[in-house]
Amino acid sequence: MTQTRQPKPATEGSAQPPALPRLGRQGPATFLALVGVLWFILAVIVVARWVTSGEYFQPAPHIGPDVMEDWRLIALRIFEAISLAVLAAFIWYCVVKPLRTTGKLSLDGKFVIGGLICFVADGFLNIKEYLFAWNSANVNRGVWVQFLPFHSEDAPTRYAESLIWGPPMYVYFAAGVAIVACHEAKRVRRRWPNITKFRLFVFIFAFEFTFDFVLENIIIRTTHAYAYAKTYEPLTLWAGEVHQFPLYEAFLVACVGCMFTWARLEAEERPIGESPIEVGAHLWRPTLQPHVRNFAVLGFCFLTLVFLYHLPFNWFGLIGDSYADLPTYLLPGY
Image (cartoon, rainbow, N blue to C red; front, side, top):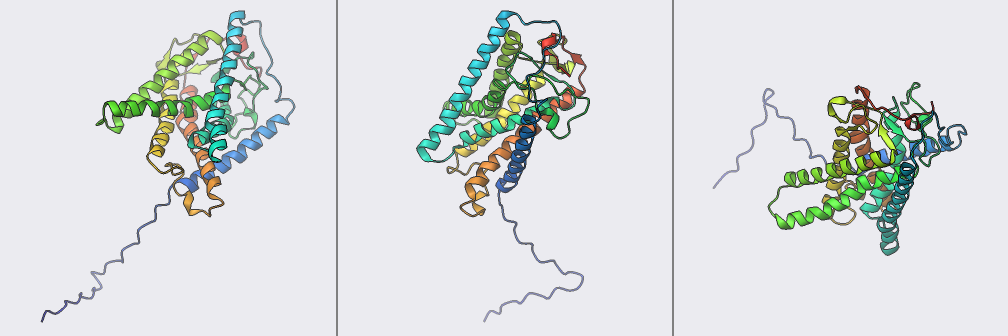
């Protein structure tokens, strides 16, 4: 008869600690939602202080003798009109129409709303120095940079942050390029079914880099809506000119676009409402889950824009040594 061998008792010198239980995989939704809530509260406070400030909620002053050519001013107004039309299209097709059809926000709709809320973070561009120049002819009510955290006392507070073409950029350079890139990625994968994800994203990055480079240079050269006041010269084309362009701008914008594209591509391969951003929302009570998902996407938008764009843009600008020869209508009031 076979006897069952009993395990030997562990001696004092050979005792093994008990195995640790496996950690549960909760997903990032709770953390991202916390970030989204904090940013939303901060954005509301900043905008409220700006709107009620009196002095800062006024069109930026026109300084100096330089006057825009008529054709540039017309081009600027056309650019503003096109931007409004593009934004309206995104809101209709990505937010309003899905809500009317399903009663829920799609991931694209959440990206659109997240981009609009994160436009408040645009003030971080000039939080230390005047790195991103704004045209005083933009339709504007000044800027809220004074009320953002980490604002330097020496940084300007009176320039013409655009309220017309500025917010749409936070939509079409994020949600917009992700929608187009995902559509084209499907075509590429059908044409080359064995393509790796790395090669696919090399194509996506090249597309988004080229899109930003071409579009921004057309806008800058035709409208003077904005300019790059101070840049890192080794990575700057046409250094010292009013239309100088830092290559890291297109690189950073492409990085942001790739991150949004990745999230959207992953979401297409998962059940609806289970994008990689929203994983873990199911751990909350059902009545709170939609809010957790919404704020998680907002937190994702904020972290992506700040860490992939605003912080590196500021770093390159602050160490930069190439100053654009700007007309006075692109200079801050004070």
